[in-house]
Length: 83
Image (cartoon, rainbow, N blue to C red):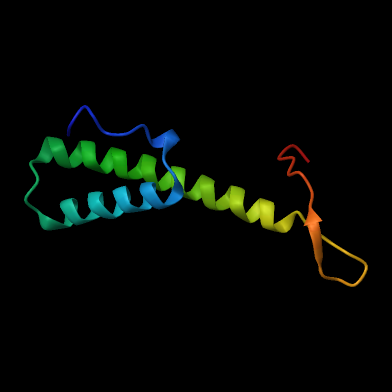
């Protein structure tokens, strides 16, 4: 694997998902040497965790949408993961 791979924590969900799909394609090809396969698998797991965290954060934001008296969304409330 190249040393110039982007920092996963800085990736958008879409970029991380695309990178994860590329990892899966390479692993499924069966043409990657064993040591590189292990590195790819580890990167893939880190990408999966990042994607899941981004999805969880998005879901939490959606769940915090505040409904007005008429039941329609009227704004958002800050998400506090501690609560």
